[in-house]
Image (cartoon, rainbow, N blue to C red; front, side, top):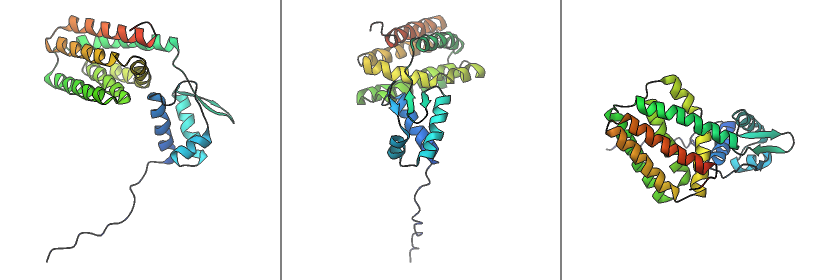
Length: 224
């Protein structure tokens, strides 16, 4: 006689702490620009949106203020900070310094790196076809981060990781303003991959420089 299936406990899956849920909700909305710069968020609205009390909302907003995404105003709420022109310039300059160095150091590129970059390129093409700009921006950032990690400098990789949130906000902004740019972005990634596959360190660095130069110009609103 077959044994009976074990009885279900009926217990719902354990949720993350309330403050963590609020933090994740707000941060993702800021990074993918559902909450744009200049938006005022109130504790009551966020508590209702996430289904929590106001206390964990305050905790989450304080953490996001420390990360430079919000500015808190007592009894009013939290203002989503816009990305300033100086911040854009600083991020692009830092990326150029790190990524040109890293792509040179990544040559000769190991098979594992080339395979991973090919996967990310294909994933970005699928996401672009589906029109998912937030996921395209995440995969775009992963493509560059993978190269930096293979430069063999852990301190540099950690420094680069600190740019993540700013990169995502800027990436989504560019794609929303210039949806035709997505295909060009993917083509430029393919060029970087081709130069790595060919073992051409200087060619790869030049491709990175051109790519970031174009991205920086678009984020600053300087053409297409």
